[in-house]
Picture 1 (cartoon, rainbow, N blue to C red):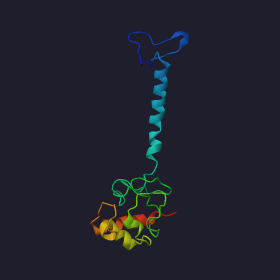
Picture 2: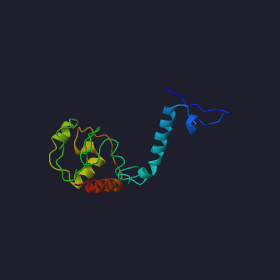
Picture 3: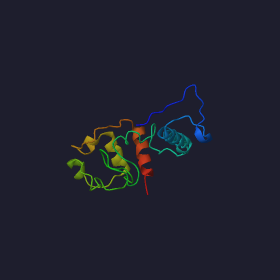
Picture 4: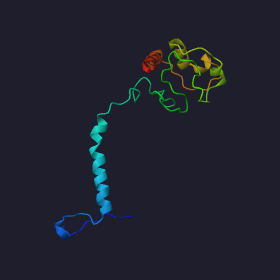
Length: 150
């Protein structure tokens, strides 16, 4: 691996009239790549953050669920387009409890509210462990989930 070397107390002029600070092309290449990466930060700053980040209503959801269309399965299934969808709809995700698989029906706003408040009371034996006790927070989550549509 090449090391970055500075010339001390010597002219930085090299043969052929070139001025150089590094004796290693690898170090110069690394510096160029770092400069290009730093130059791209303003572009990243202009990219809007997804609406489910820190402080959003859905912040507790993204720990386990993905929220984007065709998002990956995580510890729990994707919640995109969940309001009005069949319960236990993701056939390729195998983490549903028997309680939720046998519950049947679709996810209404009322069912989502009950499930978020106490999943085990809604479907005894379910594996969801997080409870949202604040009714206003549950309403904000359900309202947010309604926006996740194609």
